Length: 402
Image (cartoon, rainbow, N blue to C red; front, side, top):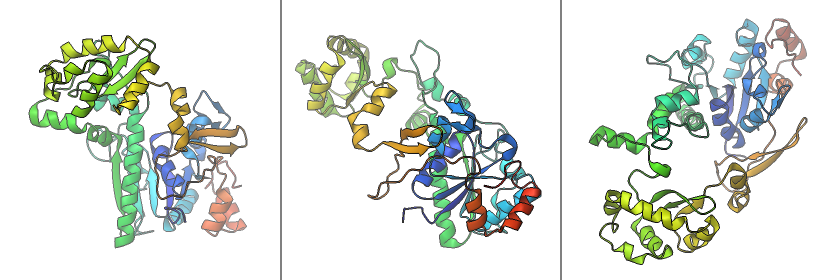
């Protein structure tokens, strides 16, 4: 069995953060049943441009492989009845909605415990289910601004900048997945479920880590550093070579000593201005211009081999295409393929979560309501008459069970 093959999760999820968290659980074998609202055409991720056609999009594929889909109108009594039957047979209800919505649509532990005392209700919201911002919508960009991330990112002379990726969303998804798994473990041990109140805001603040500790305990005020430099380790930053950029980092004294040899300045290893972390930090305005001038004399490729030979942390600054073509990407099996009825073969990145030696298997993201017959018949044991009656009472919206 795959690691999570005995886990069933009802995912009232949409767009990015929530589906990103659950896709890794699905890759590990969990049965993730996407509950898609037929009133709005299901998960909005199905329609994200530019690579979207009908209800298919490459955006949706990236977040929803290995999952199942059931169109279900939770606002209708009939749809709610189906959902409650699913709760009786599931381990968790997972959602990413506005903080006040889980209680409004009755998917918290207090709402569902009478159906299944061991159910785990994991709510990944923008700001959490308590606090003054609980009813506000939360998006990655907003959280990068509010959480202090943007003020830390970019050139000192430029405007604050967001990450090129939705890192609060993705980090929040991982936090939710960890919380959900911990909740399921405890529920199976104790027989009692719980709420997991996870938020993008909590994630953004929690990931401030050591700059927060420095500020809270020593009054440190972070500032943006030129060329994405580390705030205290010198040198550890981007350098411009003759034909592009690379990162060189001396996170240990031995790396600095090796670097002085590579750049043909061995005397700098014992130079009192540069001999230790503290010396180099204190004299960064002297050292960095000297290093930048030296590195600019050669191409990126001319620097990579001597840096690799000396085992100094370094990397070319790749674009996305180069990162996906890196030999190490291929060697680690980080590109996977699935077959799709509209797109043919879809290539995408694999989950970085690794458990055991068996490689995961990958199946394309589901069409909307594609798994209705299996879920309603095999999981819930509904017969044709019961399904027809539920459909007539609006349980599935305008999407008839397949």
